[in-house]
Length: 498
Image 1 (tube, rainbow, N blue to C red):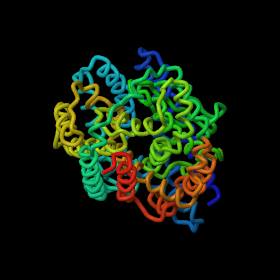
Image 2: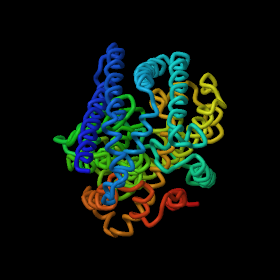
Image 3: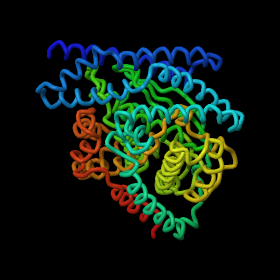
């Protein structure tokens, strides 16, 4: 048994380190890599993916895991072995040639997506997305030899949100959709909504000062320059390159708060990653148990902290001074929380946001099953935007091509944004209950008490439990859309007085 434990420790470390090298290549491609380096980067990424896959396919690794699966182990080690057995079994059902083909296709597809957005031509991206979609269908079929889900979508969803299926998710999203649409109706019928005038957000917000504030909030959340860095990219993201090396990106757009808000969002991810890797242990359990739980950390900081009045009691005077706003805190709070439909998911308010996710979920499930075709996506996208959001994109850049995820075939990923948003509301209520003084600390720009709670209740467990179990342990219940709807209704009833 000792030898088998040594073997799985060695393989985990090698796979994690190779994965971090791959993450570095991906980060570079989206930040500083020259555009013409895309084909060489595709080859580099393909080789690394192939080597990682070979590690997963190693008979020595798999046999050690199988042997340990028969042994009497402590709870933590047993959970790790079961997780490894599942992941290795999945990997062994996917041919090496397929892994290389997918990795190359992803790199080329990402490049095509960028070009298509620049030229606003879906036709440039379409053949690449068709290729990626076909490959993900094949991957789902390979996975289902072991996972035995009823459909392709669940095979891919399980890789991001273990334990969740489309059958479980659909009624949750239906409940969420009903609650959001009802709330939007009440908001739009209110006198306050109809009389709203935007004044402060029309001021000039110089780019350099926006970045200055972004860096300030990044540090206050708990990320110093010696363990992390911020750079610019088309699509904000976070990635862990190694122990004490966490990277995030942001972007300055027409929305004067986009850089600030996206930095808070990615900082939530980064703080979680730092907590997970701080021990320096190369173990698959030193990771998030699901993408949804990871997303809950970013959505918690972005919405439950960054869009609340206590947060702005600290930051508004600084914004007022630097940007010469000449307004009041109450006026500012009303403006930044004003509900209005947006074409862009990551620029949308917290009431509309999950409707954007539901649109993508509905498209993905039908696309993977072949019920709709890639060539029809712009039309289908626009129809759903009109139905759920009430507006229609004028271009595919601000429509079907707005997100980077489909360029890499991350089907099954989008639902985790809504899952994370619902978890975040539950976490918010739990902290408020456990720490009555939370708002007073936030008003001072001090988030240390929140960091401590998150570490003790969520971060420290890593993937030692399933996501829903961690949330239930921390908040007293599993995934519950009602908490998010309750949070939104309370906040916006006060804002719009209905």
